[in-house]
Image (cartoon, rainbow, N blue to C red; front, side):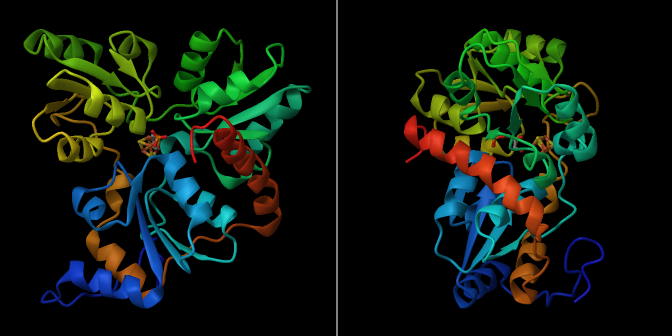
Length: 328
Ligand code: 13P
Ligand code: SF4
């Protein structure tokens, strides 16, 4: 089967009920469907598990399914494959990349690490397997603060690749980590001016901000946190209105869990769109998911040597997160 475009481009009978066919194939293959919070609503509705990057890694490590279909971006599929080398891991469109991971080419990062001997290397999960292979401990936005704080106070640290998350962690921990100069095009795009205007229109609304956003946006926040932390905050908080500065896919879950509250996506700097979408996340469609289960392609493969080195910092992250009670 040809997957030159990154996905199985085979014709689908328009009379098929895609949802029930996907569920049937899932049973037949003993597959589990995992979806990140930024996925399209129809994908989140079909998934067995929906979560942030940390939850998806943890779920992949624990599943007893034979096949993991990861509806997310490439590095998430890689993480699952590294943790479960004997399972088939499918990402329905392999061209679902990540601008943040792309902002950190492995050869350049390795050279940077070599140029700073004696540093512990902390990498955000939004990186390629090759970057993880030269990393001491992986973090996600759900555990970065606690994992950095678990390292000795005087330990020199390199943090990559997100400069905004790195800056944020430096500011709340008092550490002086060296930062790789990378960023996510979605979280960098929010407009401070448009956010201020929205606040004037909705003075009661609380502002929820992902730490991949730059400092001027974070300064306006009532809550800075990972996708899961922002969702938890929205569920627990007394406010009825929230302005959300992260990828707009999370609004589907927020609205689902808080049907009586109002969620307003913060707008980007450019364009006419009223929300901020990750074009990579939205590449996963029901059609691609169906074909991927039917043809069992495209699969994620990771070079054995790289996988053997990359698994250590990922498992270290999961171990520390368990010890600190962040995950079970
Ligand atoms: P979390 O899922 O860890 O909040 O990260 C956000 C993100 O950008 C994932 O690509
Ligand atoms: Fe990568 Fe940003 Fe898209 Fe997340 S939202 S997958 S960090 S490009």
